[in-house]
Length: 430
Ligand code: S3P
Image (cartoon, rainbow, N blue to C red; front, side):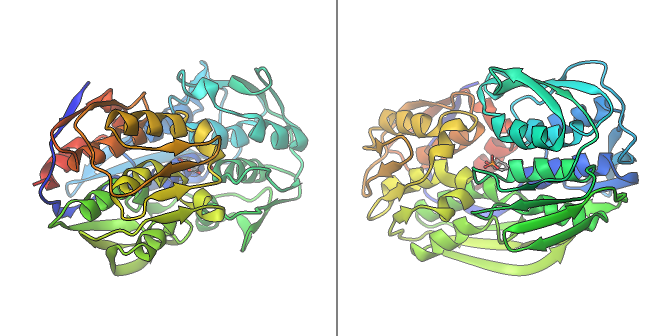
């Protein structure tokens, strides 16, 4: 499906966004291996999290959605840590790296073998990063060229490890912690660079025996988890698109309600504020161990600057839309230490650069960096998502600042994380 997005004069209104994708995956997996039912409000509407639910259902944990006072509520019928059953078919993680990597941690501990795969993009994403620690814990995993899905996971009794992942990855950390839930002894994950800590928080909320310290997590295996009522905050990585739209389109004033503000996810807000963005936090509170609040964003002159090191890792999902901002900032935006971008849903350094060039924007790339000089004008063009949700949404935002309407090819990719993206955009773009 090709979407047409016209230039906007203002971004205006009050919106909410779907539940956080990262947190939804974790609640779906953990509620499935908890004892009893969990009720989950504001579960992500994205296809990725649906893939996780379907995988858990295939392993025996049933779920259903109901309406409650006009709100969609998900009930997951937990099977207990030892209650999953072998799946009759190969599990399908779709486009979702989080599903395959995190769920592999649980599968590695089961007394049965599971095959799990995904779409064409997922079959090209690196898995050695989880295969290595899970093998060290005692599982046996077969993969194409020892790296790519489909994975055939032969579960086994696991032993705890003390592990320092070589890449900054919350998915790898989470995979090891989920395996650690089943392991004999205390599993420790040490992170040279801090990554999102939703797994640790969710494990603690559901009753795991866990100690969370800055950049070190320790989890004792064998605990039982208890199902409970959970509320998923709105996804800041989805808000990012409208946030940057409101910054770059003149006369904008946007309020976004119930946004997840976990400090391991808010690097984007800190970076933008340091570049001159007018962003205010309103009504921040804590729910299930996660911070949640409202944001107000107004059009701002953005200086631009360099993003590198731990900051790059902390806002890795927001880089596509940050580079879009770079072109209309005063000094441009440089992103360094971004090799991980090459192994996301697409090679994002490449797909960002291709689309910027289609809009006649100057951009320079290296193997792990991208540099977009400032004070440039977006020109109307036909861009393409390449099947990557964040590329579809980032270039829809670029279109708002273009000199005429743009077309975005394969725009339906947005529904991987944000099926309501275009509907919401049409409501606030004036
Ligand atoms: C995620 C972690 C990040 C991120 C992905 C979601 C998670 O991946 O890019 O969209 O939910 O843990 P890595 O941990 O591989 O960097």
